Length: 89
Ligand SMILES: [Zn+2]
Image (cartoon, rainbow, N blue to C red; front, side, top):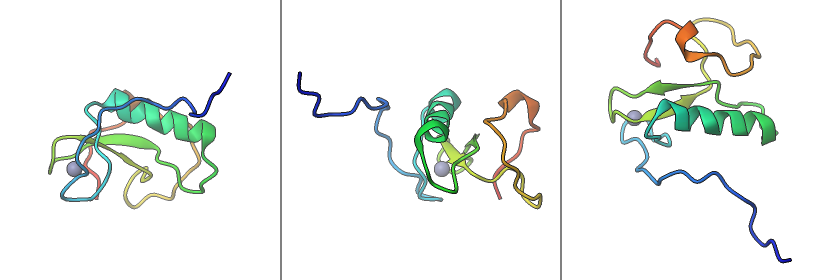
């Protein structure tokens, strides 16, 4: 059997954010799914921690900022409902 392609997350292609240049997602669930995927598979030092709704393009983006002004902690993906609503800096 020839498995030439790794199975990928299938996400719709959306335009990058015109404001931040970030990758866009239709929903928080889509963004969180990819964040969790990255935490399992990525060796990068900086991995997004959470998703936020962008006020500029109204899509969701990933961010590695936990909270502006606070030191970064290494946490698993936090539940979104446990966090106060905030915009990224
Ligand atoms: Zn945006």
